[in-house]
Amino acid sequence: MPSPRSAGILLFRERQGATEVLLIKPGGPFWRRRDAGAWMIPKGEIEPGETPVEAALREFAEETGVALESVPVPLATIRQSAGKLVEAFAVEGDLDADAIRSIDFEMEWPPRTGRLMRFPEAEEARWMTLATARAMMLPSQLPLLDALEARLKG
Image (cartoon, rainbow, N blue to C red; front, side, top):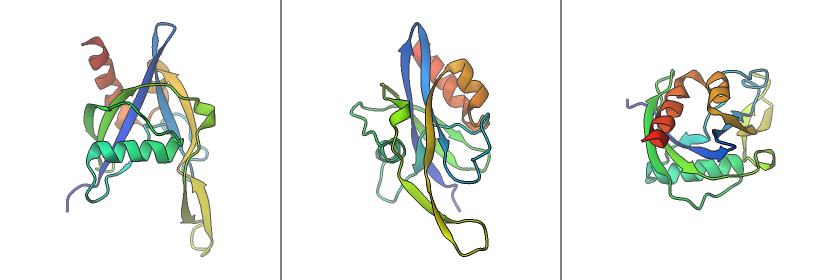
């Protein structure tokens, strides 16, 4: 069986001579008490009939409430620790991280209670310098920062 495939967008901007990236912290009980190592790019599964770039744009809009107008540039494909392939794209842009509006997902919580609860897909978004992002990002997504740096230098 092939690995699940996802696509996402690494939004970046320049501020006072430093590159900043927008990362999200997922919502839900699994991520609630986590901070360092929990932040990631807005991303999600590629649906049947969807191209990776279409999925990346859709997921970005679902998790931030912002529809990007720019054309994403292919950045890198990584394999996360659970085996999922993530095709990432870079977009230069800006948004108010405090104003994101994520869609919700539903899950049984607490486990085995039969009660369904709703949680935001993205609980929070934050602009981070590349150095801060390296300390806060999901370790399996760190190669995306390297790919962005290489692209910006090249």
